[in-house]
Length: 456
Image (cartoon, rainbow, N blue to C red; front, side, top):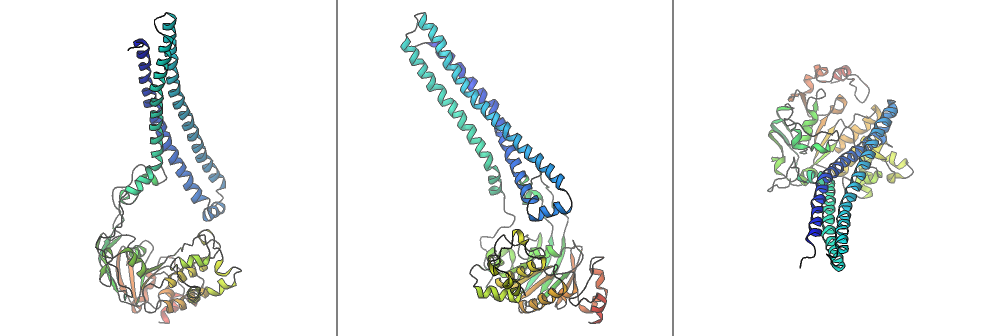
């Protein structure tokens, strides 16, 4: 039976209003949620980069406190304003949906009440109509609210999805085989060409933190051009040359932080692209110019290279790196906290801890990227003695500007403009030509380059 077609029509007229409110305000809420996530990410990046130990020190040294305060206030204000806008829009959205439902219910009672007074509708029918209208509006408003909540929540996962869906720049092949343990460590670069890939291939625009929406689509210029050389097992090869010549890039291709654009990099005849990542990591140890230490104890930082290392092994590695006596003199010994990025340790102490960490790992191949750059002459003598013992029987690739670091090198490769050429001690009469202009070159004894040459 039909209770009242007029009341039913009025109730249905409200439904398009609910849909219109959803279509009008939900896109704005989703856009505000996305903007808020981006602003929160930028704020987090600012706090992580500017307010850590190194960042705060730089701000103080350059007297930029007011600038950083103003910039932080600006970004914090943007986060605040976006939160307020999102909250107001959300309240407006939900209030509008509730209002539309309330108007529909009120209209039913208005028209129904008049019909009851006119004796054209029974009061029981009016009560039934109001119940039906409630059953109609409540699911519609709940469904619209659920849709907005779902879409707003998905904004939080957009970056996660972008990262998960992004292709890996370095992939392990399905048929990859491990490098045999105890490998001699011969290194061969065969006509290697390399340039850094385009931004779209290695990064995600939304994670750049500067509001970027597009990334470079073209790769860089050629960094390495037909590099070919061989490092015999158990020998030391030094890479020298001006900054930006490609020395560090060569060292990054060996542990496969990047893949060669053309040519091949081989370890004992195995192309690094054909071996398992775990075996490659086990075979190579790296000491960088700026060693990174976690905010943890000295022992925990050392055991990062070998989690099951015994205390005796830790002590032996630190003795070889000439750092044990210093650690033993500390009140907490190996349980001493090094601080964020190791700020409680000096540059030389961090370098020696990094060397000890690699010694504990005991790899077949060692890469030293300016590993003695932060050491004074006296400490460098100790480190050189330690390295002479530690590198014995291991293949080593050393990047250095100081001749004392590469004095005992079996092979010296001069890197210039992405190409390499071998140099021997007999041709070092013009050593200044492959060092950076203005470099002060001293050996561990403090002698100048000229004295070094005369000493043979």
